[in-house]
Amino acid sequence: MILLINPRATRPENRRFPLSVMAVGAALPDDVSWEIVDGNLPGLDVVASVSALVEKQEALGDPVTAVALTVMPGPQLVSAVPLAKAGANLQLLVTKGKAQGYLTYEELNELLPDDAIAPDRLDALMQQFDELGIELLDEAERVWATAIDRYFVQRVA
Image (cartoon, rainbow, N blue to C red; front, side):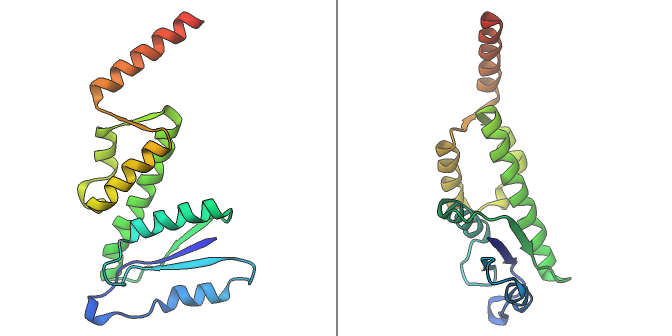
């Protein structure tokens, strides 16, 4: 599955069809599945929509293998950059969290600042971390967990 993202480019009263990503989708071979997420749709949280599609496609056995963002100079560039950063940072957090079994609140705040993700999406993100077995710890809890891990590794060795 290829995910084509058209970031918000206009004011609601000036909406346009995402012709560039529609043309890319139409040019793909018939056996390649693709979907457009259009940031110009009213009330659409693009990050939440993309996350939901990635999860859905993974469950269906047709995982997202490529993501493309269309960007034109001007207002669309302004909305595309934070969107791309938020997506990359979210993937980094999931990868790091799965590897070590936890994330700190400091890491979460550093990589996903308040304006990077909608507040209602934050609850879903916390649930996703929980489902992946990723604990959220404050810095003191992380130091304590690391010390306990080292103690048990030394005792076993």
